[in-house]
Image (cartoon, rainbow, N blue to C red; front, side, top):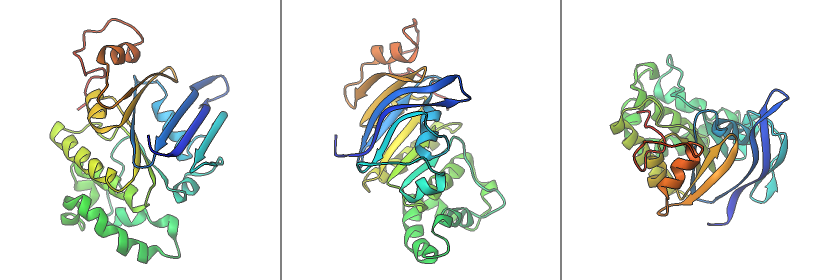
Length: 256
């Protein structure tokens, strides 16, 4: 692995006062590396992303970005550090055009530098997602689910992330659209962007990620490198060592 951009050590977090949703998480993400998180519903995947994105405070442990401790702070502050969370679902403002949705992502730079930043970054977004350039003046609410997901990804890119946190980017999309979304994500990897992606689809993570970690009840119970995926071990970790009839490679059923 390359020099770590993000280091997570002994991280614990949860909701309320009694139960931790993630427990003693240790994880490193290198610069330009794609890391996947796989696990059943309730395993703690989204909770971990919320902590990293600044939406949920940790209870214990340490986060380090570029070797420096990350304080507990709001998502806007975390975004200015280059850590950008794209939550689950196609979140667009339907009454605004595609380009207006994209421009909103530069609000963290307001009032200084916003115009120059947009002039620089919007062409990059349209290069990655050509369909958005064609639809730039169309209301986002009239786009297909896949196109709305591209708007969401484009909006994240406008924020110029160093670490992009993706929560189930393929959720609810047709397989052909998922292919397009992951093709775009693969292009983003070439820009030295680090990506942490949560999915239910083991095959997608295996093809895209350098490493995949399996979460179960808030803990990492298995870790596998790209090209060395043990599907029997992955299924056992995913299902908690319960017998499964799922075919190899489909540790999680596709929610496509």
